[in-house]
Image 1 (spheres, helix red, strand yellow):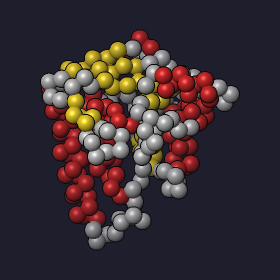
Image 2 (cartoon, one colour; image 1 turned 90 degrees about the horizontal axis):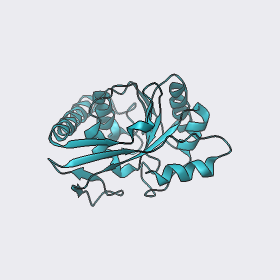
Image 3 (cartoon, rainbow, N blue to C red; image 1 turned 30 degrees about the horizontal axis):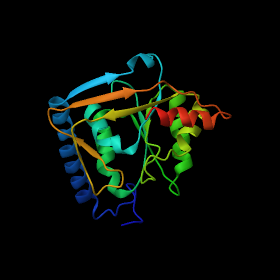
Image 4 (cartoon, rainbow, N blue to C red; image 1 turned 90 degrees about the vertical axis):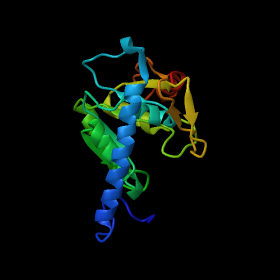
Length: 213
């Protein structure tokens, strides 16, 4: 199955593939909603954000599960850059449930440059996006240059942030040690100051982003 992506799954398996993907997505999204209702969510650093601006939100990959808990429904327009692999279909459906308006599918060797350009064009139109700069498979907490290129090309600021889960389970078999917040616990979303990336300030911008994640 390694050669297949979401667009070329064999027709004879397509109904079963979509059924399984939809079932997984519905169960996962339902759990995110339940956790959202059970947990207390606190936001810090909101004063750094302007309601009239769009941003490139940036966090480490290990924040993904609590991120979906606190973002069960977007109130603004979002575009996501996501991997086109066949096994990512449930994630694409979850993003649809959250209200993501556009998916740009691509990765290294799989129309990655075209997908990145699509995100940049939508950022210029006022869309927001989320980037995990150490994803999709590490190295852990090593910021890759893509987020800097995206910000410089679109002239949209990067907002580094972190999600703090004082009480959480760690999924030990995942490469990034994903965290599942415990029910009835507090989840803290800490936004940093927006970082403006220019072609000549990559090193400085990278330091500012990392220090706030």
